[in-house]
Length: 242
Ligand SMILES: Nc1ncnc2c1ncn2[C@@H]1O[C@H](COP(=O)(O)OP(=O)(O)OP(=O)(O)O)[C@@H](O)[C@H]1O
Image (tube, rainbow, N blue to C red):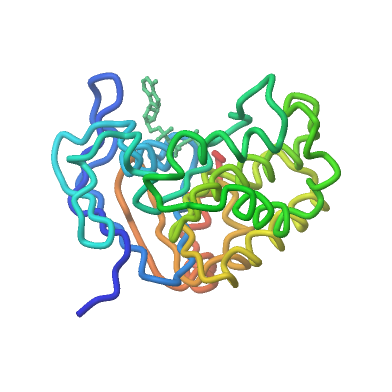
């Protein structure tokens, strides 16, 4: 028996009436950190949005702990244990850092079986200790690195078993990238599985155990990130975008 947590099989994701992934298969096993690497426009975001029920599939299945997700409404999916950090600076503006963490718990904490809202919020601030003194800051006033931390922290609010991160390191200064990587390592060390998209493949071997390469909506290779990134064809493919 496999210990698969998330299983995408034969996915054809549709965006604005166009098929943007073509028979995509991808698996994340329990406790695993997996990368999805490809140029901008390759289909990483569409794949993640399909998992979260935000982009429809023309065909295929997405199972999480054996349950078919494509039959669920999008608001139910995080309550099954999947946290999602969308690409970019997508936070609840006009609200503080702490309110961004509390909002998912207010709306869906009960459905996820979270009894102690305060304890959950403090667990997030324990990981992202740098945000502790900014807890009352409105999120639009955060630096780029702090905003990414807040977005990942918010994705942790429903105590996920799997965290999906869409380009968490994008647009950050090198020192901030190192900082973010150490936070992601801490999350992995806590036993949370991670699926992370990156268009800059160089960061990925330090974070993940296994990686998929996506090109024009298809998985073209998968395996050990260090080995894949040595491959000249993959190096060529990654250049000229991302
Ligand atoms: N709103 C949209 N309308 C039309 N086409 C779209 C839309 N969003 C994405 N696409 C197309 O879908 C394909 C996959 O895009 P997707 O955003 O999933 O790729 P990506 O690998 O995540 O890249 P990026 O990092 O740039 O978001 C691309 O060809 C893109 O042009």
